[in-house]
Amino acid sequence: MKHAPVRGAVFHAILRDCLEAQRAPKETEIQLIACKIWQDSFAAISNKDWHDLVPGSEEYEYTLNAARMAFGIHAANTAA
Picture 1 (tube, rainbow, N blue to C red):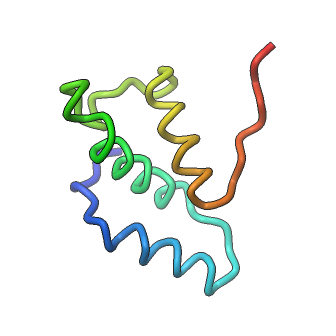
Picture 2: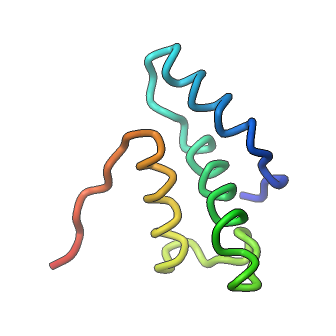
């Protein structure tokens, strides 16, 4: 799913909406925040856009987990 670059205030708006409505974030909201985390933290050094990452890859999953943690959702430990 391709999204436009996420601006800083969007993250706060999504987080505020979830907290005020006392609801879990939608998958699309998690994806938007993952995109923001990637573009702010890793895009310049990796020379890859969020949409260039392969779903299921280590980079992709790491960033999705970071987005989930931003919402207070902790991924289950899948390490064997």
